[in-house]
Image (cartoon, rainbow, N blue to C red):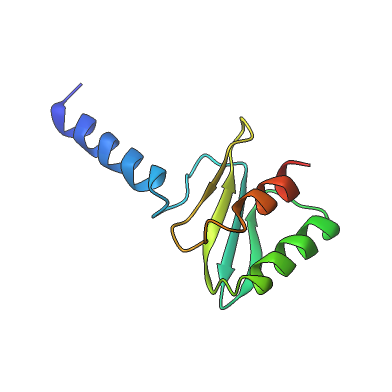
Length: 94
């Protein structure tokens, strides 16, 4: 494998792991724009959507993303504060 592909892969992994960009392989992608949520990938029931919207509103999150992987790992963008993350995990995984 050419060295530059390894470097590009490592950079992409770091950018995704740090919460700068969402994983292209996630099964669920929730975007927050202007304090409103939008499901861009996957599906959530109406109750989960409402709970997520309530948490986002309560913590005044203006932008960001949340992803759920095939292995049920939840990743947050850097703009999602630490305080609501466990609540959001519980909503998404239950």
